[in-house]
Every structure is written in structure tokens, then in C-alpha cells.
Image 1 (cartoon, rainbow, N blue to C red):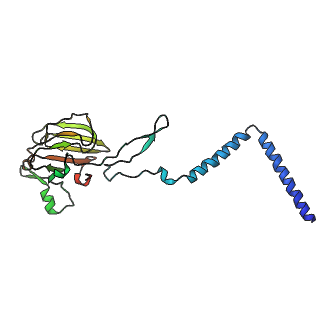
Image 2: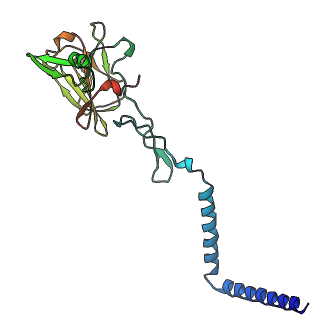
Image 3: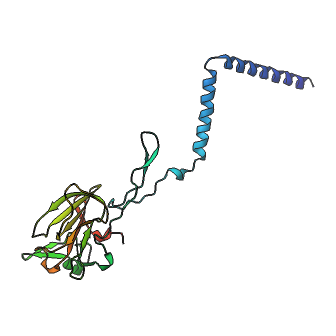
Length: 233
């Protein structure tokens, strides 16, 4: 019984000491700010723990050549969210009606069969060169050539041998080239949208065998890439 009474007195002394210390702490001028900061830290930590990790994830939509881009959002000067890339584009066939387009000569692929490689060679003055793009025809008729992706026109070239050409830069080192064309409707510096008319398919001395056609190339950081591997069917 005596032991229990002693424990109760010790507990009362501890409580009294804690109350005295708390009162002394609260009398200090900086006590409330410190207390508020402590509570705020607990609240923020709780929110971060409860927040779903998936909320900050951005879906990857970029392929190995960087043709498609992530759809990020950022904060403007007022702190409001704004879209940086409003829509991710995939490369499209540079014609109005892809179903009517026929590839007359394919891109020269080093991993293709010997037969396919031979068919992708361009012969000029008895010299064989690999085809660095694809040659598109539509039943021997002229057809409208459109931008495969949005971008800026950087080259408009008039040359009867290659059949005139346009180059468009799309960012991230990606460039598309449209060759063997006529009736060009754009100029250097023009910003064009995907699917916008650029010219009409024509002819060239470089590839007389194809007749009326479009020679279409894609380059990534200056390296030719097979357009058919990137085109979104």
C-alpha cells in the first residue's frame, strides 16, 4: 500500500513538472511559431505519404527516334498549369489518300534480304546507290504532297535533276525531305501543320523509271531512317 502511494506521488510530481515546463515554453516569444511549424511539417509529411505516386507519372510516348513526344504540363508566371506539347504527333504518309499510295522503291535496309536490297538501289549513270528514302506513286498520276509532321520549312530547292525539294525541321534533330515535286506552295521559314499541302508529285532525272512520284526521306540527327518504320498507319 505504501509503495502504491509513493508511485502516485512520483506521478503527480512528474505531471507537475511537465505542466511547469509547458507553461514556461509557451511564455517564450518564439514558442507559437515553432509549434505551428512543427504541426505544418506533420501535415505536409502526411499528405506526401498519402499522395498516389501515379499522380506525378507521365506516360512515355516517345519512340526510339524521338518522333512522338511526352505530353508534359508546366506552370506559367501566375503558377497556373499550361500544356507545353498540346498533342503528340506521329509521322504520317505524306499524301492525302494513303490507301492509294504505292511504294515504288523501298528504303535501302542493311538488314534486308539480298533481293530487297537490290530492289532498293538507285542506278545513275551506271552507278548504284542505296535509296535513302521511299519513292511513292499513285497509278502514274500526279497527287498532292502534304507535310508528314508539323514543323518549319528550312529548304525549298529547285533542281531538275532531283526534281525540286522541300525540307522541314520538326525538332529533336528530325527532318523530313520531299523530293521530285512541282507546284510548291510553301517558302523557307513557313510553319506548316501536319497534313498541310506542300506541292504536287512530279518527275526527276534522278529516277525516270518511277515516272510521276514523290521521293520521301526522314533523317534523325543527319542519319537516314526508314520512313515506313515510323509512319503511323
